Length: 342
Figure 1 (cartoon, one colour):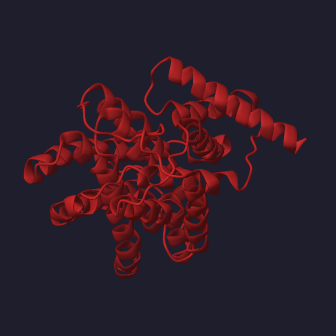
Figure 2 (spheres, rainbow, N blue to C red):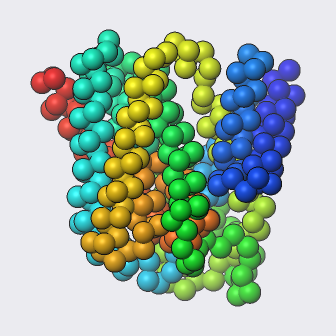
Figure 3 (tube, rainbow, N blue to C red):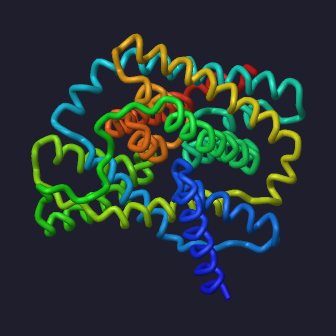
């Protein structure tokens, strides 16, 4: 029965997140469901099920959550970081593509699949690029999943255990100057905008609510801050989505290639941390925010980690958005020019 299997899936996810929270593991409500569902599928060979619309709702809620961390200073604060951040982001992109090219020369993976599968961009965007260039989309999905999981299991631990610095982070509890409850209606409007722009703007379900709510916050518009339990639920739904994306059979088919791209992911993570320190020294940004802004991971996950590590989630999410848009706009043109040559 799909319904009962779906309920069982969410029960495993919630229980795993609760265990991770008790163990004080970073991003417990995302990493817990990912680990719990993977272990369940690996040990039982059973499938998991998720509600199709749950992922969209979760992304919209987390976009709203990040937008609520914006202030009047956020947009002016990000402007001086744009040029140095973009330069260092291109260094990471070039490094990823360079190593991916070398891997393709040493293995039987075709060059286009290797390059697209290693580009530090969003999974859905890179799948679309793979389809347009007729790459091996299954392998592209696996390689991006490996990169995302490597970032999620390495960066939050380093940020919260090693780089932690007290700072004004992301508030997930209602404040004393909470806005009127009717403003929840505005959240519904910005979510509809984000949903409608999915084919035009990458990650629009996160970016549109984040920027719209952030703009209202920056203008001093009083908004109702949803209870923290709502955002915990959203993180569980994202964790289920990521756990659902991990296909044990596909991992077995990819075999030893997974190790190559895990090594690539770790190398890029190490370089991004080093460049994060460079960005902090270059711009005066705090180290936690700089490292998380350059981390080759998801916008939402890095912004939430910024909250836990004492960084600035609004700055992290803004800079991650800039990189995401740069990758989506520039990489397809680069691949169109480069792939016929290699």
